[in-house]
Length: 403
Image (cartoon, rainbow, N blue to C red; front, side):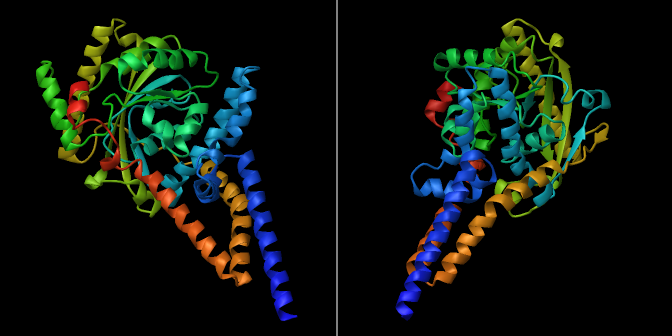
């Protein structure tokens, strides 16, 4: 009788666990969000497809694209906000990182009220996250775009989700990128909501090794050397500005630094470390920038010389000059996170409790393996942003020829 009762209880727990997992997956199919981090990623990894949960709803909305493109965009803008704001929440509420702007009020008054191209230095692992927190505070997080390297298309959560959000990908080989980049940029001309289009004009994250090679290229081309930046790749900027002229009305030059010579990491954010970010922002109207491609390229090189001087001044004094503005963080990111955490973690916790109470060694070991795979998957996702694992061709002979 005891064995029969134990068998019935074990089967009941298995059924409960299956129902909880099935319900969780159903929610994930309806919504790509926090569940990707906690259950969808691990579950998908076990099945050999770690991306399905992040793109499930975006796939569903594809049926809307041929019928009403603008409606598709408006829906996915809000879905992407729900997803990316959870990362912003980690920066703002979990780690408590501060972001201080150095700019004038007239520039701030235009934030979120115009299409713009953002030029950002690429020195830190979390520079994209600091950019996203500014996007969130001024209402353009869901509609933010970027010219991203093609390799990111393969990254869990980010890559395939970006594909459905009309992010423009490039392999950084103009002969192969020409048609793809022109098509992607021209497609954004009628975007229905104000967007910020991010460009990392340096093409890759700054490291001493890449900087040495970049300055060799600058010397061979007779261009001024830079101390704190890589030589900007002008083709991406001139092409983006040319294609989006008439849509974007301004270029925002953003120079990011961290106080006390902090070296922030995404893992540090996850561990709750607080950083203090300073962002110097200068707005240029597109009318100020030459139409001619060569003159536009020269303008960009001059901009980077000015950015380099700005970085040098920050290195000496530990701050930028000018008016400081601290935009307040908003509750929406925290509320969004708590909503999805409550909805998705409840069945997961019930699942874990059921496994422990079952007393079945097989179920317990299986669940521990599940958690181990989940932790590895999240760690691999974090490693994508690490400076020494960017996978750039800078620093080898092939990269040297291309740059």
